[in-house]
Image 1 (cartoon, rainbow, N blue to C red):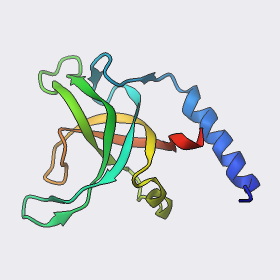
Image 2 (cartoon, one colour; image 1 turned 180 degrees about the vertical axis):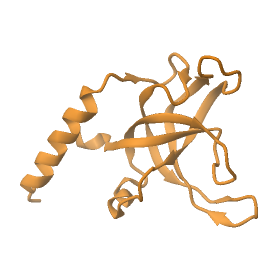
Image 3 (cartoon, one colour; image 1 turned 90 degrees about the vertical axis):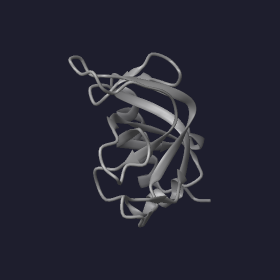
Image 4 (tube, helix red, strand yellow; image 1 turned 60 degrees about the vertical axis):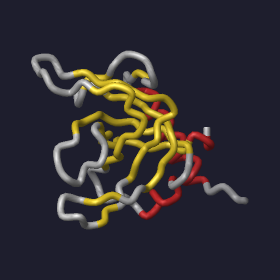
Length: 139
């Protein structure tokens, strides 16, 4: 298989950005605060069947975590403590590119911030707003 120079350059840039941010790799360590901490979580990218409040089928992206996490409220908040969360919904603040399908079933690392489930379209207690996704096998 021929590796394209653009692919190599984009992978290198992604790796430099991915590793240069002050983040902590969480997986079974300290509880994570919602929205204020950038985290990197790893697990398997899966798609599940779920229903919204009206019973309509949805297919949310889920990260099945390597190790469960716990969350804690933001300073001044009283809600947001969850423990032993083994699956979190993946939320992309942009339209997912067609290439996201390449990650289905793959072991990946996601960099982002955590948020609470707040709508009927959220199918786990905790969600991650994606900044970057990396296929762990490519490392």
